Image 1 (cartoon, rainbow over the protein chains, first blue to last red):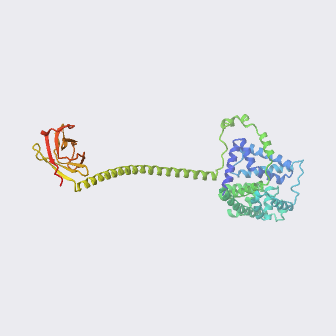
Image 2 (tube, one colour; image 1 turned 135 degrees about the horizontal axis):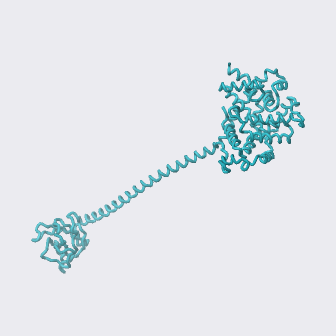
Image 3 (spheres, each protein chain N blue to C red; image 1 turned 120 degrees about the vertical axis):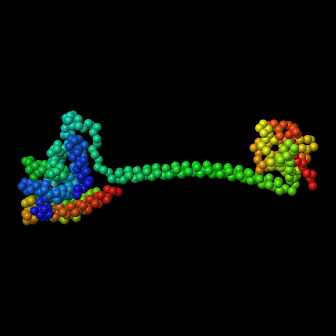
Length: 193
Length: 275
């Protein structure tokens, strides 16, 4: 069941992008800039380079919106893929010393802990969600979604047999969906008042 | 092919996460086209990750300088794309806004309030109309009441006079001119009042009017002409003449005369001497 708010946002953005309207860029930046920046920032850790990649990604989305196929995936999935690929291309290119992948899984998990501790009050919903999501589940989602980890690398990083990455990611996503559903209900109730 | 088992295998998650080999990816896409359940599951996984990414994105707001930079990098849409401007004039409709729940609720409440106001306004209007009608009827009744009260008062006064011991009832009997005519005068010397009733006077011929006279030591005194439509059940309050000896009615030209034409005498009656 698609969330109505996200569906509306996606439709609005796509319409603006296809119209080649400058407002489309502003809308993209306002509503998805943070998420795209987050995806890029997980892979490209250097802030200056990260911003360069973000600009590049925003322009690519704006320019290539007509190649997006609505029947195949959601708009955000498409945009997130562009962002991740752009970030990966950048770290693989010469002149950028890749250090993200050499970070162990410990670094990622520790990073999470400090994140939720230093989180501003307005992100309390996310903090609670991250706390509720078991560390192992969180790690597998983050490694696969945000980092450039293959199934094999993920299995190695999490010390899992290779065949279990699929089922583990399934369980992790199920848990995430369950938590988000509750979160959405609360958000919906809040937005009504 | 057990679709549920396929969904549960986690392959769809890896598909959305873009972690499948090209062969596996094509297989997932084939299934997604064949089975709506697979399509639906993929969409839900996408939504969950989207939500997760957006929540995480709240922690990493993009630098505003990035927006300035990309806006500068955009081709000048108005000048560089004449086809786009043709389809979309600069004053094109603003981007569609997402429906705003509180606003809709507010509009609904406002609409209902307006309807309510209109309804009560109508009610007040119709009540105002009926109040106006009632007020008119009330005024009419009040006037009726006043008239009846005045009438009643007059009747009571007349009754008081009639039942007064000093009141003399004088029957004016018909003269030779009109043997059947009768009239009655009630005369009260002490109270100074005179009442007249045309007990039986035929309607006067056209151009003529009855005139009432009191006769005292100075001769006949004019008491006024009688209304042509005077009925027998009316008691007229007429001018008092002290020490009247007799009362008479003559038939005169319309408007009356200063002195009576005694040849036209209709009825006459003498005041009996005081006891």
